[in-house]
Length: 495
Ligand code: BLA
Image (cartoon, rainbow, N blue to C red; front, side):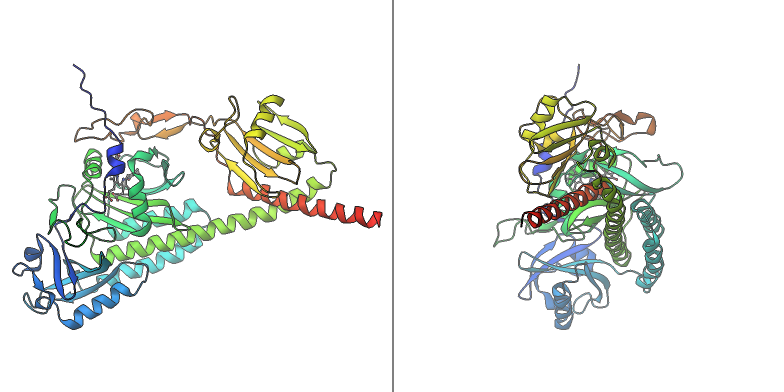
C-alpha cells in the first residue's frame, strides 16, 4: 500500500521561528526589566551553577556589570555585543561569555561557558590576514572561495559552502566550497527555494549568524512561556542561543549533519547568500570565534559590493566605446544593436515602425510583447528573466526574458529578447516533486552526486548580467544625448 508521505510546505512558511520559546541547552538566557529577572530559560540555574535565578538580578551581577552590559546592548555597532563576565553575587567567581541585546523591552542576557583566555586574539589574527587576501580577490567566485577556506580554517567544520540566492526568495547555487575528504562535493549544485522559508530569510537579514550546536539537543524552555505584558513568547530574533525549527533539524539529520552554522551575506540590506557550514559532530562555537565569523561575513559582503561596483565601472567604460561606434550609423542598425549583448532577437520601434532582427519572434508576437511591457520613462530600462512571473498579461508564445530600453518619447523602444534557457541546472533534489519524508523525517535528502537531478529551467531565460544592464543604460543615455544634439542643430538651422 502506498503511503502518502508528501508534506505541506505552507506549514513551514507560517512557523514563527523567532518565537519558539526556548534556547539551545548549552547556554542559558535571562531577561531583565527594572533590575528584575522577568524570564529565564529552565536550565539557567544549572548552567550558572546557582539556585533558580529569580527576583533581583543583583543577586547574580553587580550594578556595574549590568550598567556595562546595558551600554553594550545600546552601542549599536551592528554586530553581536558580547563581554566576558565573572558572576558577582551567588555563584561568585564563575566565568561566562555574556551576549546582550534588547527585545520586548527587556535586557536579554545569554550566558555561554567562558572561552579560554586569549581566544579572541587567536581568532582575530588569522581573520586580519584573511581580510587582506579577501581584498585582493578580483571576482565574486574568488572572494567566496577565500571566505569559505578561511571560515573552515577558523571553525573546523567539515563542510563550508558559499550559497548564492538567485533572487530574494528563490532557489540558490553553491558557488564555492571547502569540504573534508569523503564528503560528497556540492559545488555547482542548486537547492530549491523551499529549503529556506521566507521568514527565515527575513530574520537572517537582521541577525547575521546562527549556530546550531547539536541537532539532538533538548531545548531549554523559557519560563514563563509567554511574557505577561505581551501574552506572547519572548521575541528571540536577535538571540544567539535561539532554539531551532524542528523542520530544519530534520533537514540536517537527513543530510547526516549534527552541527551547523550559517553567516548572512547581504547586498544593499537584502540577503544575497549565506556561508553555510556543517559538522559531523556536535560543535559549540565560542563567542569570540562566532564574532570572528560574523565579522568576516560583514567584510565579505562589503567586498562583494565593491566587486560589483568595479564590474559596473568597467562595463560602463567598455560600453561607451561600442556605443559610440554604433551611433555613428544613422539610422541605428538593428544588427549592431543585436550584437551589443548575447540575445536571440532585438525589436526596434522608431516613429511607430517596428523591426524585428533575429530568431524566434514573428511581427505579431513582437507587437503583442511590446503591448504587454510596462510603461517606463524615456531612458529607463526594464528587464525580466521570467516574463511568465513578471508580466500580468504575458502573450501566449513569447520569449522567456527581455531587456527593454525606452529610447525616446512616442513609444520608441529597443527590446532585447532571450528564449527559455537550455542549459540544465544540477539540482540536489528534484525541484518539481512534492517534498516527501526522508529517512529521519519530512524532507527529501539532497543525496549523492549520482542522484543529482538535471532539470531545464522552465520559463526562465539566462539572466541579464550587470554588463548587459549597464550596456542598455549607457545606450539610452547616448541616444538621448544625440537626439538632444539633433534637436538643437535643427532649431539653430530654423532660426
Ligand atoms: C533554515 N535551511 C536553513 C538554513 C540553511 C538551510 C543554511 C539556515 C540555518 C542553518 O545555518 O543551518 C538550507 N543548508 C541549506 C541549503 C544548503 C545548506 C539550501 O547547506 C545548501 C548548500 N527546510 C526545508 C523545508 C522546510 C525547511 C521543506 O527543506 C520547511 C518545512 C525549513 N529551513 C527551514 C527553517 C529554517 C531553515 C524553518 C530556519 C531555521 C532557524 O533559523 O530556526
